Length: 319
Ligand code: 13P
Ligand code: SF4
Image 1 (spheres, rainbow, N blue to C red):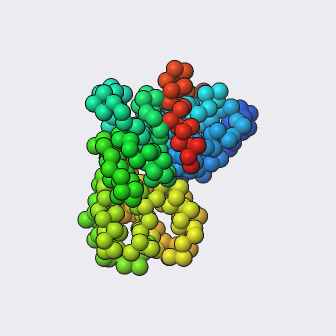
Image 2 (image 1 turned 135 degrees about the vertical axis):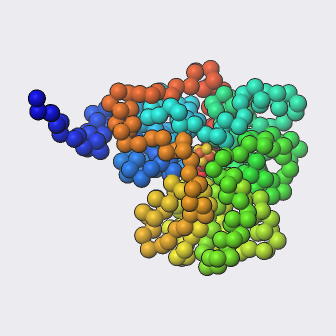
Image 3 (image 1 turned 30 degrees about the horizontal axis):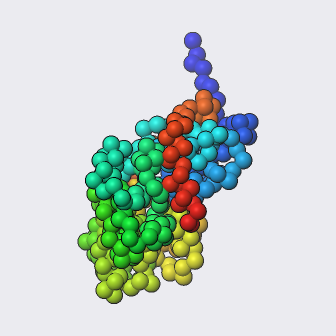
């Protein structure tokens, strides 16, 4: 019997139709694969994605990013259905502290203020006083009265960066992201010598951040050519800069939106294999399946969501 060949469906077209039918929107983080970014209604950093969710009228959100980010959307917009096309999309940094560890840390320092980076689970946020992202960490720390001890978690490089900028000493949890830790000071310094005219865009989670801050403070490197920015901040800065060449120290997914929005400029990855496997778990097939079958919902339990909402809203009041 002749084999039946079914016509191949155009998934992107089907996603478009289904999105309208279900009145859904697709939101993606800057590290998502290009095909997923291209079919998204909005692409941004973790703070921009949270704000976009609050702003949108749509009740169904297909979120292409990692699990803790989907939880943040569910906390901020509990009336909306948040679908994550792959539930295994985790985050090594968010996993570096759990709620029991935080409770124990708080017991040891009972009068402290807990500042949690947005890369944390909902349960950890629920035990925190205020959240921060890579965009606003400095402002958040500056908003805490000087006589208060701060427990900053979970990223040690972001913590060291904030300490240096604010001249405020904090207790910092020794967590790190397995991707950004590879972006060492040695690597950045070598690149600086081989590319003297390039500007450096560095994510505050990188292993090179403390050393970069030291070099900036000592005037060993040009502050004009070195920017420590969130992924969204990198996109805005690259557009406004007159430089032609940029070395980008973060996950390589960011190169796609940078190159797309700045076709006359050249972007080099500081490390070609700085790839977050969690961010690459989502693809067009999974987005289609998620929209079609309404899977996989990320819903933070009401009690935890209510507690976790407070530190996020507190952060949003400040920035
Ligand atoms: P941004 O908020 O800067 O996009 O960072 C999120 C993240 O997970 C970085 O690895
Ligand atoms: Fe988490 Fe690092 Fe991946 Fe960002 S790059 S999502 S911090 S594991």
